[in-house]
Image (cartoon, rainbow, N blue to C red; front, side, top):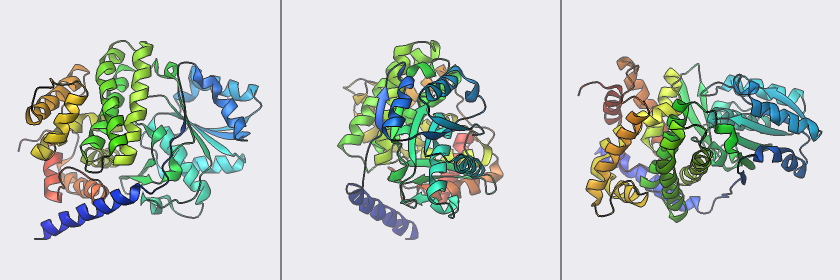
Length: 406
């Protein structure tokens, strides 16, 4: 009885939220895309009266050719800048606080994030800290807790996966509690997104693979959830099609500029889709692993995806089968039951072809109850998943992901 009432309460919350979300202040970032568009950054900063920015990146990218170009473009335009280059994968509250101190010290008026999802999320976190100076970041956890306009934010993704340049979310880690959680608010959508495929040409093959599969996860979870609508469905399908058509070409030939451009477009579209239709247990589990073990998010999603889809079983077959046919992954004549099964096998094979492991064997058995509790707390009642899982079912999923025999 308790389980029935719990699921009923979750579904009621999701339906109410789905109705309410249509009245919320959605917007898209101003989008600039194409090889070489990085040089347009100063023009757009000046157009918005931003004369002093904090550049948020990491210790590797700060030495890259494209970051040096950013500094050159800003200097030539007379725009001041300060740099925070200590962002780590799964950015922490300490990252945010340290960067916010540099922002204030240098009297910055805007933020430019250069990197993958971690740098963009860190910059979003800095924006939160600037407008919510005395509120602990952990209090912002959840949905619509910021509620104040953050400084002008430019997102320049160096990977094609997270879609953070299009989303309402910032995902933050707390090293003290080993938690990783999203903060969702419309004010966190970047004002400007620059998709310059030249930046991704030197992305290592393994990152091309896992970030691309991360974007595919976004598209699938957005599509098979119960809060889909026409705009998110169309974006998810187009993203899925672009990923399947281009990910292996980019993996094998990192300098295939057309494949790189298409993957960037796909990541943006998948981000657009899931920020409106939400994700599911793949992300909830991946976030828990990022918090506990610092697992790279793209890798976690890539490995977890087929296991979760298989665990959903018939509850996701209709939508997953239709999605697989719509993106051209399986023959159109297959029924949705067969299409979904074939598609899951294709995802596994795609992972294998790009040397993505089938399991995450580092998961410690004694951590599984805590991890499951964390995933449940994130996903329920918000995520409109095909099947609501209880703690025991989630623990079973973790053992499957680990590769433990049932």
